[in-house]
Structures are given as structure tokens and as C-alpha cells.
Length: 122
Image (cartoon, rainbow, N blue to C red; front, side, top):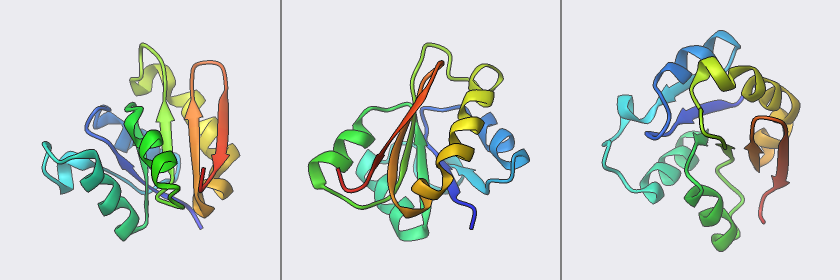
């Protein structure tokens, strides 16, 4: 079963096309929710609708840790240039590598040179 991905407001909507062309159903938050929604609202929607959150925001990982939550999964991209034309190969590789973990509940942090995974709850 392929994970579904909710792209956070702090990432380009271009990620939706990039992820979709690699087989992941994805949607940008701006297409389904209030652009001014809190991180908690985004997380609650993702959990309720079976999506992993793809973000550049450190707060999502912190929320998971503080709540000892088992979901939703979060993919956190780190770096100066987080546009798809720069980071897509690394993000796609990390998603392929950690898809089973993400489906079960995980925090995956992706930077330009590596990815790491923490199984939820943390």
C-alpha cells in the first residue's frame, strides 16, 4: 500500500506533481485547507484522512515527540534549497527506502546527504 502525502504550506505546490509522478498520491495543503491553519490542524487532518505530512517545519517532529503520538507520519526535509528540482532525487530515494516505516508510523528526516528514521511513538 502506497502512502498518501500531504504537502505542507511551507513547501512548493510543485512537490505534488513531483511526488505523483513517482507514484505517491499527494495534495498540497493550500488545495484542501486554510493556508493560515495551525500545525495542529494540519496534523489532525492528516491523521484523520490517512496522510503523511511532508514539511520543512521542525515543529511537526517536536509535536510528535511531545505527544508520544503514533501518527501521522512526518517526512521532514532539511536544507537551504528544498525545491523539487534540487531535492527530489534525495526525497524520492528516502520515501522508497522508508515507505514501510512511514505506512506504520515514522518520522523521516531527509537532508541533502542522508535520511534517518524514527519509528513512532518517539
